[in-house]
Image: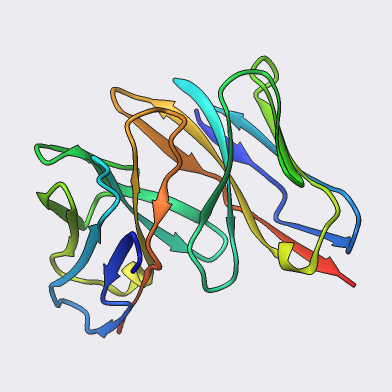
Length: 111
Length: 113
């Protein structure tokens, strides 16, 4: 079967580092993406990993281990504006390539 | 102007009505998607299209239909709306490569009474 799991909520303080984990079980896997969504807003793309390792984009980094079916999003130097929901999404090939989104992790950054 | 535009932004309607949600894009992307979002369930794929002649069902296509009128336009229809189709609907587009991000519209909030 297929599954995609991430924590429902995470709380951290301004200036800290937080890691949001994502584990998946799926066939036809080709990559892991992360999206951010502020309340009332549209999802926006953060990062994509197709190969094992770490991808860094400013304060955000994303990691993938294909052998462990695991990835994470790392947010450094947290700011209040980082309070949002974060979704991991697995890319699956089933004759066509499409994304399957996780249920999302709501990050609350406190002063 | 937004790259991905959804209309209407909000809609309240009654059970049994036919509803069309429209999406247009100026990004020149071939790939377009329709998702619904329910609280606590993330985004679920309804239908997607890789070009004008290519339509594919997603994980929750029952009760929905789509039309790809042109490269830039992809509409979602609810033939006979029911209350459990009340949700936030997003249209998205993407380029051809696997690493191309999906670009989302601002969403349509649909309530079915």
